[in-house]
Structures are given as structure tokens and as C-alpha cells.
Amino acid sequence: MKDKFLIALDLDGTLLKEDKTISEKTKKVLDQVRKDGHIVMISTGRPYRSSAMYYRELGLDSPIVNFNGAFVHHPQNPDWENFHEPIALSVVKEIVEICSRHSVENMVAEVIDEVYIHYHNEKLLDVLKLGNPKITTGDLRRFLKNDPTSLLVQGDEESVKKIRAILSEVHAELVDHRNWGAPWHVVEIVKHGINKAIGVQKVADYYQIPRDRIIAFGDGDNDIEMLTYAKYGIAMENGIDEVKEVAYEVTADNERDGVARFLEKFFF
Image (cartoon, rainbow, N blue to C red; front, side, top):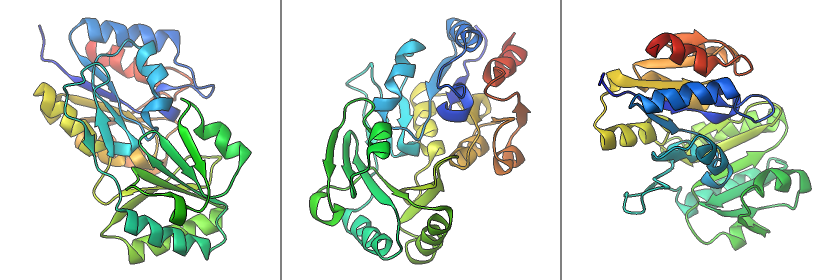
């Protein structure tokens, strides 16, 4: 067989179309790539509970990267050593205190599959309840008892910019932060040094696949490190400019089978 490649797929804006489905063409190409002996994996900012349906739909048997690298596990292998790097609870409570003084709309902490929401919000609940997590509503400074995997801060565009500036100034050595894609004005916060590349590297080491045989697809600023790490970092045409600037190549957008088109050209 030819050398085995590891193919890492972001979900939203990359593998998924705008209606949050995977096209039949893309599924067919990914299935053929796997039959040829290559490893296909998901690397997403989503928690596992809201990415598991795509993992199952593709019939994957590989580890998965969730929470932008803060949690990596193998759904098919309970003996695989999980990787979990949460944010220190004390740091999160300091951030919540800062945010409460800057008119943010809401804050959400997630401890793997436990969700803690600062203010009750039905629209946000609709997004977060996928996968039926345990949900607690109330002041995070009171109800959150364990180090969270990630912290989300929601506000208007200006308040999100302000919070990110404060985090960069005050907590730069403790946390990293990213923006969610439109239409959400949300900053996602994880432990400093954690990103998708860290998770993909752990999976690559598990399969003993070197960087020059890694292909990664992405569209957002939480994909930049992953695309830089992989030899073949592929940006979607619908991706942000910063992703395209670091990419090995730009493929078609997520509505036109960008993932499948590149893989067909590369492997077939």
C-alpha cells in the first residue's frame, strides 16, 4: 500500500454545508480514502456530544479532537488514553468577574458534557442542548465547581472585541481565545497553548504518521495552527483571509464539495 495519510477535518464551514449536512459526494470520497488505508478524523471546536452524529455518519474508527484541542479521545477504544486540558477554575472565575463588568450578554462554561449557563437564554440553550448534556443555569462563580474544558462569552461585536483585548493583556499566559463564526459574537476561551494542532499531533503520534503525511482542512481562526502544522493545510474558499494566508492550497467552498475535490485530486 501507499504511505498512510492522516486527514483532519474541521466541521462547521468545512466538512459541513451551510445546512449542517455532509454531501453524498464528500461521504463517498472519504469512504474511498478510508478503504485505501488512510485515516480520517474530525477536529472541531464542538464538544463530542454535538459532533458524534457526524463521526457515526462517516463510520469513523479514529480518535476525535473536540473543544479546539482541549479534549481528545477515542470513541471506539476505551483503553485509549484521553487528553483533557481544562482551564483553571480560579482563572475562569476571574474572567467571569471581568465580563460581568463589561455588559456581556452571557457566559457558558463546559466541563466535557456538563454545561453551565450564567444567564438563562432560550436561543443559546437551543444550540447547547444538542446531545442532551446536563445543564445548570446560574452565576458561574457560584455553581461552577470544576475546571472547565472551555468558556464561552457572548456579547455584541464591540464587547467581544473589548473582552478579547482584556484577555490578551491580563491573562495572555493563562488562556487562548477565538471568535466563533458569524452570526455569533462569541469568544471561546481555552487553556493557553491548546489548539487543534495539539490534538491532531497526538492522533498522528498514535498512528505514527509524520507531519509530511498530514492533510488538514479548515475555514476559521481556530484552524490556523492546525493548517500550519500539517504539511498540506487546505483552506476552504469560504474561509477567512488569515486561514488562506497560511494554507498550502485553497479548495472550493463547503457548498461545492471543497474537501472531496481536493482529496480526489490528491489521491485519485
